Image (cartoon, rainbow, N blue to C red):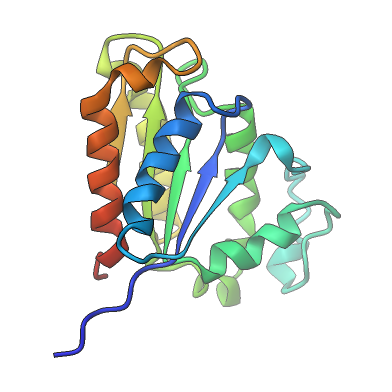
Length: 192
C-alpha cells in the first residue's frame, strides 16, 4: 500500500516578539512535522508589511488585491499549503493586531473562484497567554472557529498555553511543548 505523502505546513506567527512564547510554540509544532518529512515554512507577521483591508472588494471581481504590500506574496503560500498554523498570543481577549489584519485580508477568498483555493484546508491555532484561566482565550478561539468555518476551512486542533507572559516562559511548560511537537507529527500525515 502506498503511504500518504506529508502535508505542506505554513506556520504564521502573529506576535511582534521573535523568540517569544508564540514563536517557540509554533516552531515546536513545525519541528514535529519536519521530523516526519513535512515541508514547513514560518512567517513572522511583524516582519511583513500587511495593510488593513479597506473593503474595496476589488478581489471579489477576480482582480489582485488593490493593496501593494506583502500579502500579495503570501496568498500563494496560503494556497499551496495543506495546513496553516495560526499562532497568536491573547491581546485584550482577541488576536494581536498583526493577526487580525492578516485574517481580514482573507476576504479575498470570498470571491467564488478563490474560495476553492482555501476550502477544506486544515487549520490549527496555537495560543499562549498571560492569565492562568483557560477561559481567557474563549473569545479568540471563537473568533478563529467562526472565521475558519466561514472560509470552509477545517479547524482540527488547538493548543492553549496559559500562564506565560515573559519572553521564553513557555520553555518551563515542557508538557505543552511536547504536546505541540506531537501535534506537528499528527499534522504531517493528517488525512483530510
